[in-house]
Length: 119
Length: 233
Image (cartoon, chains in turn cyan, red):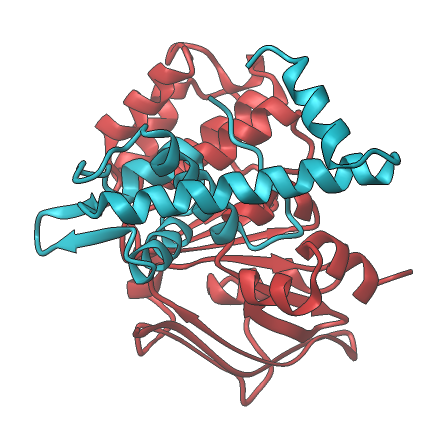
């Protein structure tokens, strides 16, 4: 897969978002071992230092943790991952609603459109 | 983090014209640095000074790992010049032998492995290779040295976008922990995603020296946009 980056936004923040989606969607599950910084950097074709910074941020959010000498792991706290998913879903829903609002459609209409779509 | 390269009060005058004007820079270990500036800003002159190919005006100091430039720095700095110096009549295998004889830290196996990825026949003469292929070969030679500092002068100019991607990937995947890379270019948008730090140089002076992501956050723009704004013609 090719990853695209917007040069206007710090790269580490974009990496953070990519990895968050991996955690939310279960590409990496609670307690899974993560690839090494270098392997991760190679996958995304970014500088290992930038990847390190993104992982540090995830660590400070407690989404991942480092086991000394053993590498980095996804948190075992499934509730935290659920919460992350919930927050992300709310953000997506809000952006849908605000888009519909721009074209003059309210919440009820927005829901109707959703129901008309295959999930 | 320790300083790999220290540049203090560095100036260079050619025919009464100041090409570099009191440059001060610190390059740390383990970083990829973009040396960015318009044509004629002084990038190549700075690079040649770091490689000890030019002599600085009096008072300027360049220290590599705390030592003055010389045999030691030449051994541990791997330099890709802007223009090719390879004898076009040579075969790829001759060039590799040449590098092996010349540099004790040249990893022949690595060079051949990288050439194999490119499906490049080592029996072919350089004169028979396309410009893009020649650029790739030279990058492979330079990146196959086990150095502390890699200096790449305009490695992307004149090559197609696919070759650019190959060059960036090769730089990233061969970026050894603890070593640093200085890349000079004016093609910023292609390269900015891999840079840790950026140094903007204009009319021989360093005008901005910053972490790339900090600069993006501060200016809310890409490095390319900031560069265009800063150096509007």
